[in-house]
Length: 603
Image (cartoon, rainbow, N blue to C red; front, side, top):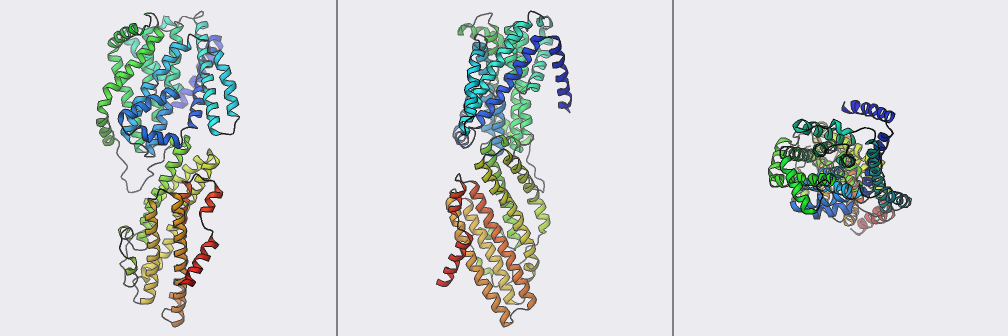
């Protein structure tokens, strides 16, 4: 609803501004170039936000002070607290970091974003930036034409810096020309009314531009051209700081509960910081004058004083809020509780992570494992085995002879509660992620898609198997009962082997282990087929039983095949090798059959 109002209003304002003033065109073009430059820089830094960033983030956030430092440094380099916020939400949603670490990063990002004001006020307004912008654009394009994603990333960053410089140049020139036509200071407001009105204007400007950095640059260039008063510029800076939380809130819409909590922390911090700045503005102004004089900032150098003010009130917010981080975490966890409804929901997927290929892949892999964990329980109960029994050291072979107790369950209801929503969310997420994925990531996403599909297929096969299984596993005929219990044990042993492989970090070892399981299972299937033929010949089971046994044996093979395929695709998705090397790691179907045949001859 808000976008329907803001966009037409923006068009009307811009159209009127273009019509009445050429200087306004320069200012608007400067803002547009600046925002486009930020988008280019974000695109460039995303090329370096994969595994290296993930490893660096893990090592840099195990302490709160490290999280704070990471937020400061990353935002200083990227010059976008919004990008850092979105990255942090995506990492938190994928459970690569905790909420406390995420809050530390957000606090640091607010401090890091103040460096941009220093660069613009101290350098951007005193140098002809357009002279530096053009060479950066030229070199940026050259890097963009290279095949390497890393070189393309450098190209995007150079292009971004070039457009940022051009944007600052046009804003500065526009306000200089504008001052000769209209004196905006005649609209200045003093006192509490001016403080509140211009704070609100700063918030609205940041919401529209989705960048507090762009808003602050606009404020500094207008202040340098004497188009706004120093007092009103301070209020605008406070409003810009509060308005930037909107980007984080939008990034949290598609995030899980952890991402929403982090967005809540961001909102609380910026609102608190803004309120503290408003109530203590006179104290802050005294501090600015004192520290500014100590730093050699001139009494009338209002642009550098604004940069110092921006840093001081954000620093004050960090100092006030940092001791309350644990309290904030507990409060957010009580306020925003996890969904404990009967239906299981996705845990790791986040719209924010889609812009970060490696994070998106990690989230999709974790969510697929979550789906398989749920399927593990459904399949176990479907063959009347407890999950605890499967993962224990209990000898499953002892279950073959006696009548088994049926685990009552509604498989369709269990599917709807534990599988359906997660499966749907996974397929949708994979489709979006794969649309923008590189070749390497595309292969991994294909593997994950197959794994998700195999989960559903395995459960459907268990549903078909269960129809006769629950009847014959309690039959008074010991022969048919034994064969159906063999089915249960065979699936149970595969589930047990997969449970052991679940925690294996080495995907190559896991793939080789899966081949060994395939060989063992194929050998047992051959033995079972011979036993069934013998029972039919001696009349130990009826023709109806024999037909059921043959048909259900096919379902057992289908369940096992899907289970093994799920785990193979999960481990393949975690390999960085190309297709040819992956294929060399796994045995072909004919190789597995030959090995099983020779093993049977030896026995």
